[in-house]
Length: 529
Image (cartoon, rainbow, N blue to C red):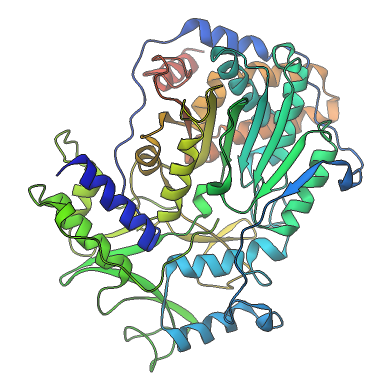
């Protein structure tokens, strides 16, 4: 099968179902770059202050441009349902139009304009349903900033810098990065000239605006975008891209291999007369298998067949078209599928692996993630961003596909994703191999590494020691325990992975600590101490 045919099929899948397929992603192999390591670690000695809690300034002090291309809501999603619970909306929708793909269910639950999870509540922090690394410790954002500064310096230290963050949350990570930039002599003379935030929630935009007003960068032009595909490249700025806990919340499709072929997993009402499959439970909603092909499973099955039979010519048979498409939106369990170690696969080990999975296997595919990753990759193309770029993706997942990772979070606990829709965060593990494949045309990727390895390689221990020396006694225990939580082997330290993105053609080892053997070296040093 030709590369052109493969690309055509992937594009067709993305357009028709917002779904795509994965490839393998390996840690870049190279010698340990000692000079880069020394430069990175030396930054932690600078007097970056403890995070302060300022009184909020008026949000109007931030120079803001808001870009919105959202389409008007239809009768199902519109304000006429605002007084009702989202569960009622979902049940009426299913009874009227049929069971929903998981991707559509996630979109409505997370982003419904009046009843969605991210549009109606404060979901972050100890009072919300989950807490993120930036909220736990300021050191997280500081070390990310240090990594970005070293990449900026390695790519010629352009005079203008812009920051693009996907899903900024409360703006805490952005504020910590900006604060660190101001404290580092290498970066303080090179101002951040623009900030681009991908955020569709009006409530969160307001919170982010207030956070920016307190960051000391109130005079920087700030633009908000509904979707990552809208962010344009820049010809005269160095681009920094941050995607922290963004891809895990993008919608997924779930497919199951059955004796009759791949069938899509759908969300149905728990009604014996309306359910897709019998033996319904007492819950208001349930998962069931589509009795026949759906648009997404049809295109996926065709793609799998072509990959499994590379002699076929995909270009002679156009991909099917559909009356409706499944729109993207902006969330962890053991994997069920492992990629075969075969370098001779026609395009991607993931594609051929899916074609050979046994009956009963499930796969989760996020076409929205593919689309976003391809758009991000274009920001790294030398032709569109000649001043350079650097990016970090930090999320749950690994460089492999998952089959049963979709879950809900509520009050800091894992829950059934079908319970209390609109009041529950929905998330699925990120397949970094899949992102790597989507980025490959325009950018180089490095990793993923565990969050523990990434932060410790950048000097977490030294930075914490510095903070403890200057912190009041009453805060020292809090600082130390927060840092430990970030690198906990049984928790965030290994559950979160970090992948770096740089322009194509960067020298091997230029994206330290993404070098072969770094995790083993750190573990060995820890045992020796």
